[in-house]
Image (cartoon, rainbow, N blue to C red; front, side, top):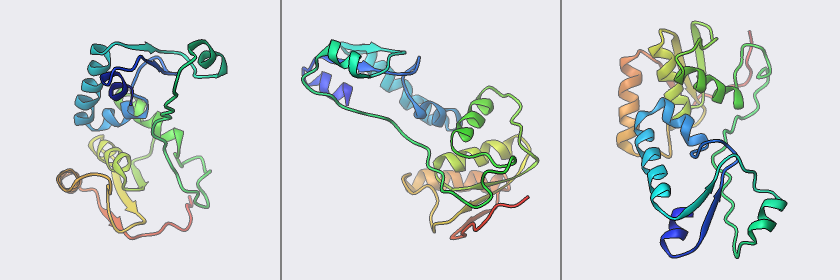
Length: 184
């Protein structure tokens, strides 16, 4: 939105709470390298345009009063959604923001602190890419998706690429399987 507005002649200030642009897309780039190419492109475009980028800045009442903008575009970014499942508070379950931390550790090639047998519930893009990463690290991974399709926002080619990779890694995938409870 910032690039679009700037390209149309508007004076744009981009406020980012974090120290780096990209938000949750940075973590998606860790697991799927082609995302990094697109993220690099977007960052370069913002740099090339006369956008006033303010990192480590929170968009609050004080900040907005100082800027006195004619318009505000609120782009809160992607969110991880984890449905609640009975038993999901157990110590051996990683969910929500814990998944982001796991992705960060994977990107740093750090100890992933998960067992050798892992069930990944949710075959959205991050679930699929996490399953691939865990399988590549030598873990036995099983991917479970309650709906009938994997990676629904992705195109056919990307889904096919992931299916081939999961098959090569020996990751069983079950779609249309509901999860009633997580137990030990």
